[in-house]
Image 1 (cartoon, helix red, strand yellow):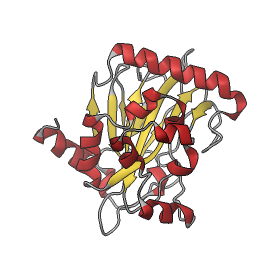
Image 2 (image 1 turned 135 degrees about the horizontal axis):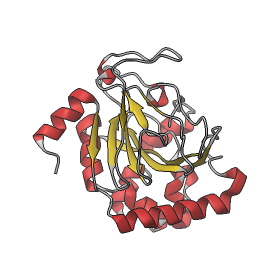
Image 3 (image 1 turned 135 degrees about the vertical axis):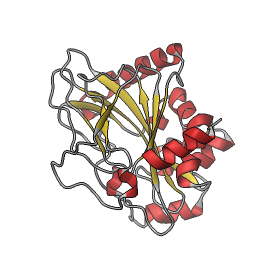
Length: 253
């Protein structure tokens, strides 16, 4: 499914835009589910991971609906993850970030989890599922193409001429080598800017959110073998990593 051109572009530039990967009716269903979760969780929304000024957040989303379980198994996204991380990878977390209308919702440039590639290569890769059109004014993603290959993290407040905005219609998925420098921008419109972040990590690293502990037993019982594998529910190595308290931290969108 991943062409040689797209594979090489992702490898060199650190990102890949996949327009129309989510059908319109599925986008509408995700938006309905996301807003339902926000309404039910109220001020506690996102508390399983982090709260962020001028945004609404959801975390631990695999536990909150079959549509989220479906998202972690998207075959195109999984193929892209394998291209960046190799065959041994797992879901790290599934979060939602909604930039509030008319707010300073921008972020500093960062690499997810403060991650630098190690002797085995890259170990974090994200997919940004665009649920509201990303425009130049509503908090779209800014990136520094190629920065995943620099082996360094950005200084606080840095701005580079090589920065660019990633814009596109709802239904687009952006694959992002999460070592690449990136960040959200301010939403200067009257509407929220919502996106899902389906975030994966290499198998020998701990999950950002330890899925086996967070997912309710009834959810775990209903999962397919593929979903269980992606969530590393039967991986003793993952249990050891997570229970040892060696989880990574850092600024994730």
